[in-house]
Amino acid sequence: MHRTTAAPAPTSTPRRTGGAVWTALGLVYVVWGSTYLGIRIVVETMPPFLSAGARFITAGLVLAAVVAVRYGPGALRVSGRQLGSTVLVGLLLIPGGNGLVALAETSVPSGLAALLVAAVPMWVVLLRAGTGDRPRAWTLFGVLVGFVGLAVLTSPGLSGEVRLSGVLLVLVASVLWSLGSFSGSKLSLPANPFTGSVYQMLAGGLAGIVVGLLRGEHRGLDVGAFSTASWVALAYLVLVGSVVGFTAYAWLLQSAPLSLVATYAYVNPVVAVALGWLILDEALTWPILVGGGIVVAAVGVIVSTERRK
Image (cartoon, rainbow, N blue to C red; front, top):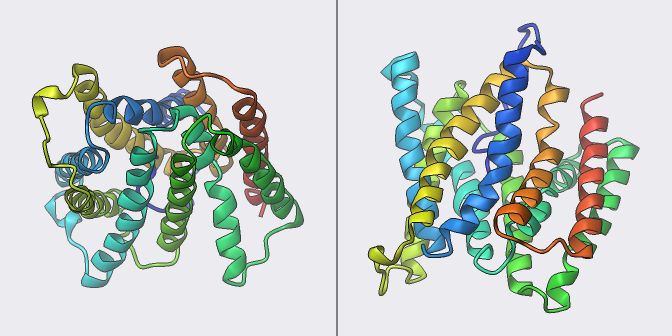
């Protein structure tokens, strides 16, 4: 999972669709789509919550340095209320969302995890509806179609092809991620999205370490047993997945049409499935192909309908 903050409000800056926009969009497509593959490789030899915690603490410190250099140290100052809101969102997104995905990927293929997480826009629509918003009819249709796709995607767990517990963990993670994203749009967060991400990453990363310790992931831990592939994947997740990916995304929100930026929601899972198949030889079973196609199509309906509001 990739986003670590709610999207800032659109500005009046003219939107562009030049080469820089397409380069940044390509980065978001590939980088965020590849994070599921990276997580899968990390947890092959590293404990899930401890590795996720280390990832986000490191990424938060790197991003804090970038913010201090780019905007000045004063840009890292936040009010007590903003800090509390940011920490809450970080806890929902990182140990709740990303941490559970890391745990699930110890038994669930990365492509399947990505397709299950692709349902986040559906959960957000339901959260909005529960707080008085009235989604459009086509949006609700997209949600209903998406749930059909989720039902198909969960069939490998019901049939015993993958662990049902892992599938359920990803679904819980997607709900918590949706709740964090939805809460981020309602709470008082720092005006600078990079600053907000710094504190979300640090709070979420520390919480991930605590959860890992409570789970006993440190017992018998042998750092020497961590594979080179896992170390490389962890470094990739820190620098490319978290810092580069989010920087490109935040820039796109200020520079490109939001309707174009939103397409990442249904491109990322396709990239994740393709990479899992090509690099890890993950099977492309009919539930993944059919259910995944239904979910991606449903998310496309939701995104395209909502962007016309």
